[in-house]
Image 1 (cartoon, rainbow, N blue to C red):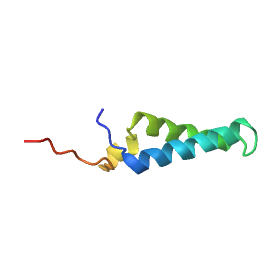
Image 2 (image 1 turned 180 degrees about the vertical axis):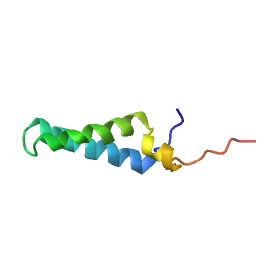
Image 3 (image 1 turned 30 degrees about the vertical axis):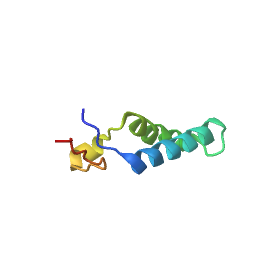
Image 4 (image 1 turned 90 degrees about the vertical axis):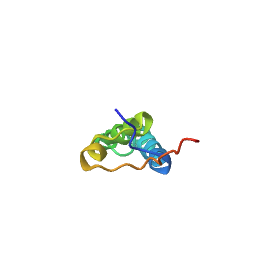
Length: 66
């Protein structure tokens, strides 16, 4: 499983997912807030299944020193 979620994308997924889960846990937005577990998980793991299927990769490629 190669990482395909990088940098800012990863930070945004974690932040948005955490906010949604917190709001759902406190009862402020209802059950739909638990959908925040998906971006939270993909942000923490660094891999997104739909990105893999669509060939999207937001990770920067690193060049090895010669």
